[in-house]
Length: 373
Ligand code: 9MR
Image (tube, rainbow, N blue to C red; front, top):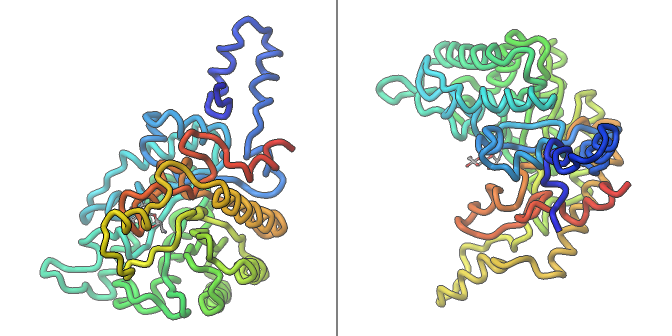
């Protein structure tokens, strides 16, 4: 049987060519969607690739346009891609991403303006490879933030202004931004962003947000920004999870505590690895056995693991719903299992099962509860 979730609304209308107009409309809107299921709770989003927004990946395109009301750029807005050399901008994929979201009436999220990883190599250094001065880095940050945000002014709903600035122990990550500007790089980036697009929401975004030390630091940063009159609208809790992390109670505590600061809380980058956490130090002499251990389920998840994975995802979703008073958006980091970054991290070439839709484009069982309501 054909998977209805994969068939674009227009195609369904075509298939029903013999029906009256009102019958066609009823059939199309009858397909249960995630965006309908969560419409009273929060936005539901997905990270997308150029293959999706250019319509090359038909499966992703169909699922995203049917089920999601928000999209975020998985890679195409990162500085190494969008601003590869000083004064040089590559807008191709970012334009296509924004056009796609606009065409589908989605809330578009820009990711990300200031991040140490996938940072354009020229950004923090001079022609001899030495760090630039604080003034030069500020100028470069202001130019980058202003140029990128201005291009999409009025089209982008919110920006991950600063990504992954804090370590799990609550101290600042030692990045070029921190090394050159100290803690001030965060307020500075938010000031530039607020000036560039007064309407766009501005966010901090990071992983391991269940860590109490990290939580404390981010709450301090949010409160400091607000005390100084610098706008911040939300905090993104990346949801990269596994079968044995995060601690659900601590994760929930973070949702509540962030919510109390008054900014919006977003679950960003949600995915849950179904594979065992990798122990690269394992002493396995036999290569075949080692590969089997690293990539244990190339042909599908065993039933018990599949059940456990769905149970954990369902419990997480219930947690998000319990806190829909403060959670404004839940975004998956990809669409189907086949296109997840987790297939290549922390080990290349594994068969992972972390996303909301399977390799054959079916919604995962834990979503049935919501799709059948
Ligand atoms: O999913 C992204 C992957 O395709 C890239 O190769 C990788 C490079 O660092 O970045 C991935 O996305 C990251 C996101 O931008 C920030 N949080 C962690 C995500 C997973 O690494």
